[in-house]
Image (cartoon, rainbow, N blue to C red):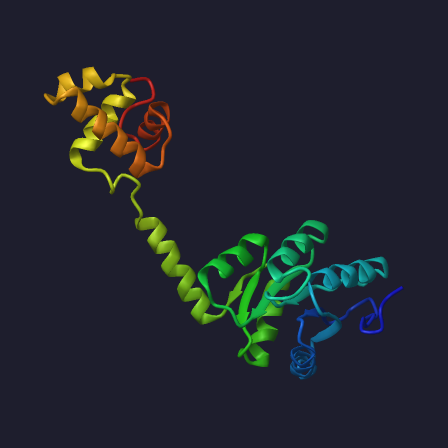
Length: 232
């Protein structure tokens, strides 16, 4: 049986349908009012948390009225928006999720997008921005709040600039190459003209800086980074 707050929309040539998920009733009412001004979008129902959202979607699915898009808050009791987004995408892969929240923290943005959200808006968004995000999500396109988009771009640029070898000194890179060639500390010391103790210190520093646990991992790392050929 479908709950009282779930509106079954007639099939056929229908507008996009949306499920609003937020633990604050005032927010849900405001979002309904926002979307009532948009002729091609209809609110199919509401949910007060992630768990209830899944229940609502199950009921709508059984009625053959699965909504096109879920507008998802992040911070909610029982099941938060990130966990709910992941669960929705696992159970109802055709349903798109647009996050609508007050949180702009990079960790939450990344977690929501990784969970499968197709959009991320802040709650001060205008009705036409929300409508545009719903339409974009239905087309399989991503719509991000400008502040979120800028944050994502900065993060991507930082990742592109990141060099895992940047932490190593020139001597440590030389030692890493010798490790990858299978040479022991004594042999490394002989090649570089340093003491065996110094060679051991370099190896320890390399493992620590790169977050590796063994010389074998260091050798594989060197191959992956192109310091030596796999057959060397």
